[in-house]
Amino acid sequence: MAFISQRKICPFCENSEMVINYKEYKVLRKFLTEQGKIIPGFVTGVCSNHQRHLTRAIKQSRNIALLPFSTDYRDI
Amino acid sequence: MRYYETVVIIHPALEGGLLKDNIVEIQKLAEQKGGDLKNTEVWGRKKLAYLIDKQKYGTYTMLQFTGDGVKINEMNVELEHNPNVLAYMTIKINKTEMKEQTADLDTQIDGQSSSSPEADEVNIAVATEIEEEIPDVGVKYIQKILEEEDEDIVAGNELEAKLSDDPEAEEDKEN
Image 1 (tube, rainbow over the protein chains, first blue to last red):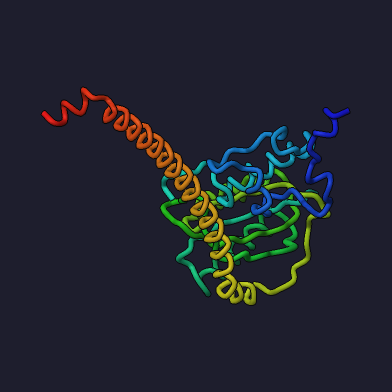
Image 2 (cartoon, rainbow over the protein chains, first blue to last red; image 1 turned 30 degrees about the vertical axis):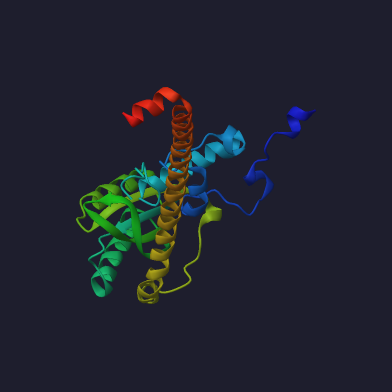
């Protein structure tokens, strides 16, 4: 069916080398908007299991200032 | 017995010997309040994503150790009252995530001064990416405005042409 073929594949299921960890903030940054918000899984195609791990890792790295809580691009 | 990992951001003003003293102090704390200290990694000076205590930069250090949950809270209280620690985070990890120490503390502290420009470069690269994106939007926006203006000018010219065709308009001009 066309509906299923259009569905995006989860990047973490597809590639086992991509690890979700709060230290790898360069990977996590791809799943944030410019403002610093977490992009929902249905937009990026991340499966629900990995999305849960991802949100936890992002929140951990925000805690130690590796990722921003929010950014206003007008200030840059 | 559980496995824990603590990331500590130390004040950027501390360098060399003072930095080492602080890290050793935190290591002792981890041994007292935790258990066996397995690994210490100095990530070096990094740019913070947001200001902490009015500081832009901080020296990141990571400790891995075994311990008991109740004593970890006491360790966090000690870190909270340490004026040289900007921020800290203790989390529980799996045994598989534990690493063995590869380099001495001295070599790591010496090495981080040379590796720090790289860390800065990464942040600068991210900043430039954002900077590049904004002008693109700006250029597109300006192009749109210019196109709209062009359309207006064209429309205005047509109107003028129409007006000039009208005899009455010519008369007005002559008058």
